[in-house]
Structures are given as structure tokens and as C-alpha cells.
Image (tube, rainbow, N blue to C red):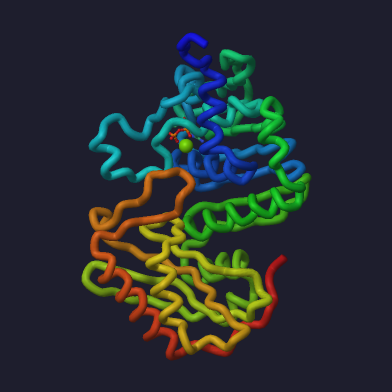
Length: 340
Ligand code: ADP
Ligand code: MG
């Protein structure tokens, strides 16, 4: 075969393999876009575990008519423009790949109205060359993205979709992780027309604990120990509990607002709990570590939840001590109740 440039759609479909694994990954990308757009209300409507339809509506800054088509093309982003920006990235996205990837493996409609624009406009990405059709429509300030028939044109991927129930479970888990990272944003989630989750904005401690309880279940909420600790520019706060092993895992750790699953952190937590847990118990936590952004590399791979701390030992020992001190007051294990 002679060397040739891949058609846009095919290139995007290949890239989609990295970004879009299943409906929950679409949700993650779209919710992150809404958060980056400054929304404080994000509503999701899912049909058939996301196989059939995903709709997200936000009240963020919107996309101007002239930029709708660009938003759907690959490597198009409003979030960075030079290498320096990448070094101190504040937004959740920056690769400019999500919308292009999703629209290459589904039927995507993007509708948006910036407050300063009189009318809302809609863009649909269809066809092999990803030609975009634009038309005016009605929509409040903000953005909606509708994704129909995920993987309709990539049967190999479609085959890997699990049952509606399993896919919905992943979506629910994804939203929970995000909901615990942004108490200042209201979220709702409907599945097949039924409102299943509603996390109102939480501005004070009581409201935050209420959201934590909605996400982690009553067993966690009622027994959670509040923790707050700081040392040399490191700050840790959140909630801890001990749960019986038949409760679902409730382990959430955020570094500067991003959810992480990191070996070093995990080790520090396990060590702090060591000897305190009965054989049938496990650690449950919702914890937030804040530190100077210069002290940490957030892994830039879209799917990986790893970080690299410049002072790994310091961070490890700080987390370990903070938890150990708090755990002196750990109440009895929470019963195996949850919220579902
Ligand atoms: P990235 O988030 O990496 O920039 P995306 O493909 O996810 O790439 O989005 C492309 C661009 O489209 C974004 O940079 C942003 O300017 C715009 N955009 C996407 N979703 C929204 C939204 N919900 N509200 C406002 N702008 C959006
Ligand atoms: Mg994005």
C-alpha cells in the first residue's frame, strides 16, 4: 500500500480508542467539558445504559456559532495555546480530542448558546469526512451534547459493551467521583426517564456531608470521622470510616481536586489503618489533599489516575500521620447499608 494520510474520520476513530472506551468515558469527558466551561448545573439523561442515548445539558459559558465546527475537530481546544500553558494546566481537558473522538464513533449533536449571542446554534457531525451541518435552534444559555448510538459504526467496539445495567453502573460511579470533587456544582442523573441521582449544590459543611452520604451511603455518612490536618504546605481534609467488607468500596482520594488512585497514597492509608480494622472490615474514605501545584505532576494520560509527588516521602508520611492521629477516635464499624 502507498503511504497516505488517513481520512479525518478514521484518524478520529483510532484516537477514540484511547478516550472512549464505554459510555461512562463519554460521560466523564462531557462533564469535564461542562465544568471547564464554568457550569454550576449539569444534568444528564441516559437511555439504555448509554448505548442508545446520552444527553448532557449545562449552564456554562457556551460555544459561539463560529466555533461550533472547530469544537468538533481534532486538536481544537480553547484551553491551551503553548507549552507553558501545559506546565500549569488548570482545566480538566486540554487535548482537544474528546468531541472529535466521540463524534467519530456516534451520532453527535452539539447545541450551544453563549449568553452574549442572541440565538442558539446546533452542529451535527455526520458522514465520513465529518462534515458539520449548522442550524439555528432554541436553547437556554449553555451547552447540550447529545450522543446517540455509541459505536454504531465500529462493531468491534460495540461488541465490548456490557449489559445496560453494568454500563449504567459505570456511569453512576463516574458521576459519583465527579460529584465529590465539585460541591459547588449541582448534578442530576436520569436513566430511562427516571431521576436516580440528584446532588444539589452544597455550600456549607452540613450540606457537603449530605452529598457525601448520598454518594457513599448512610453507613458511611453516619459514622464518618471528619479530618483536617496540615503540615509544611500540605493540607488534608475529608472523612474517614470503617466499613464491613460486604459494603461496596467507598474510597475516594483527590489531589488538588483531581481524583487519584495512587500506590503511594494507598500505601499510606493502609498503613494508618493497619491493626485497627477487624478481619471483615475495610477502610472507607473521602479525602482531599491540597498542595502547591509545583510539587506534583498530574499524569497527563487521560485515563490514568496517577500522580508523581516531588517529595514523595513527605507526602506519604504526612498522610499516614494525619490519618493515624484521626483514627484514634474511629467509631464502631458502619453497617453494610448503602444508598441503592
Ligand atoms: P478539550 O476539552 O481537551 O479542549 P474537547 O474536544 O473536549 O477538547 O472540546 C473542544 C473545545 O470545545 C473545548 O476546548 C471548548 O472550547 C469547547 N467545549 C466543549 N464542550 C463545551 C461545553 N460544554 N461548554 C463550552 N465549551 C465547550
Ligand atoms: Mg474536553
